[in-house]
Image (tube, rainbow over all chains, first blue to last red):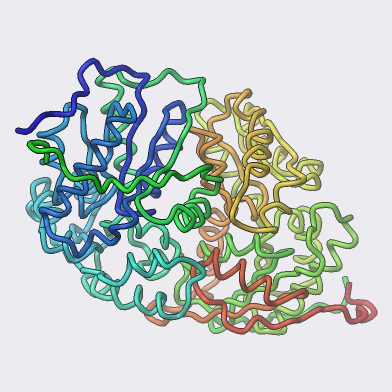
Length: 283
Length: 283
C-alpha cells in the first residue's frame, strides 16, 4: 500500500466528493442532493478522458486515484465513485489506498434488482467494460442464484447521450435495438448499469413497459445516507448544502449539459486537469 | 345540450386524444406512452392561447370544446384533458357535450394524495385558477376530512418552464419561495397540480426533501388504462403505437421543447388554429 491520503479525524463538516468520467454521475449527484439536502458536494467530471467504457484497468485506476485524491484534498469525508466502469476497475484500489470511506455503484443496484424481480429475470444495460467484467451478474447471483440475468453491452449509448439533446431517430432506434433482448427475455426488472442512462429514462421506459428500472443514483444515495448515518458523519438538517463543480476538459460544455440535467445553474465550473506526474509510491 | 359530437360505436382501434394549453400535457402523455405502448395518440397543444391559468371559465370551456371536438374528429375513442386549469373549468362541460369518454386530471391525484400521506398534511402547488377553484382541497377532504391541505398558487412557474431550459438562478429562487409554505407546514405529500411542473421535478424534489410528489401524469395514466380496460377499448399488446402532434401556435417552438422533454423526435407538428366561428348550438 502506497502513501495513503489520510482522512482520519473525519467530521460531519466535510463535503461529499463525487466523480465520474463526465456528466453521467450527475444522475447520482441529483439523487444525493435530493436525499441529503444539508450536505456540501464537490463533483469532478473527468471530461477530458471520456469515455471510460473502452479504457483498460490500469488507466482507469490511475484516473480514479487522481480524481479521488483531489476530492479528499477538497475536504471530502466520503468519496462516491459515480461511474460503473470506474467502480468495476478501481473501487477496491481506492478503498485500499485512501483513508476516507469510498462508496461505489453496482452492489446496491444488484441487491435492489434481486429483491425487486418477481419472475427472477433481470436485465442489465451497461458499457462493454462493465458487461465483460461480469460483476453485476456475480453480485445478483450472490443474492439469489436462481435469477436469470440478460446482459446487453450498449457501446454507442453513453456517447450519444453525451452528445446531448434533443434526441433524434438514431438514438430512438439505438435504444429499441439495445432493449430488444430484454423484452425477448421477458425481464420484469432491469438495471441501468451506466450512470449516463437515466438521462434518457423516458426513452428507456417506453421501450421496457412494465419493467422496473433500477438506477445507480437512487440506490447509491440510499446507501450513502445510511453509511453517513452509521458513521456519525451526517450533517444536521436545517441548513442548505452547497455544491461546486470541476472537470478536466471544457467547462462550458460541462456546464451546459449539467445545468440542463440538474435544472439549476452550476456556477463557475473549474478546469482541473489532474495531469501532473503521479508522485512515486502513490498510485 | 347542443349537437353532441358522437363517439357511439367506439372500438379499441380508435386513438387517444390528449390536449393541454401547451407542452405541459406532454408530462401526462409521457406516462401514457410508457403505460399504454400499444395505443395510438394524438396530442393537441393550444399554444396560441397559453397560459390557460389566467383565463375565465367561458373562454376555457370554448377552447377546450374546440380542442376536444377536433380530437374526436381525428378518431379519439377517449379524450384526456391534460391540464388542471381546463379540467377545473371545462371537464363537466365536455363530458356532457361529447359522446366519447372524457378523463381529466385532479380526481386521481386527490385520491392518491389522501392515501399516500401519513401525517395527513398535504401540499398543493398549482396555478392561481386551480387554487382558487378549491377543487383539489374539496376532493382530498372527500377522501379524508382530517387532512390539512396547504395550497400555494405559483403564477410565475408554468410561464418560466414554458420559456425553457437551461434553468437559471431566477427559477431556482422562485421554486424555493413557492415551496417554503409546504416545508413550513411539514407536508409529507405534495400534489404537482399543474402538468408543467413535472418538467422541473428535479428542482422541486430538492426543495421538498422526503416529500412524496404526486403527479397528474402518473395517476391519470393509471386511470386511463383502467378505464380503457373496463370499457373493452384497450388495444392488444404486441403492436407499437403511433403518435402525432398538432398545436395552434408556432410548431417549431412546440417541437423543440416537446422533443427535448419526451426524448424523441416529434415528427411533423401540424398547425391547427381551431379559430373558426363556433357552429350554432355546439358550444
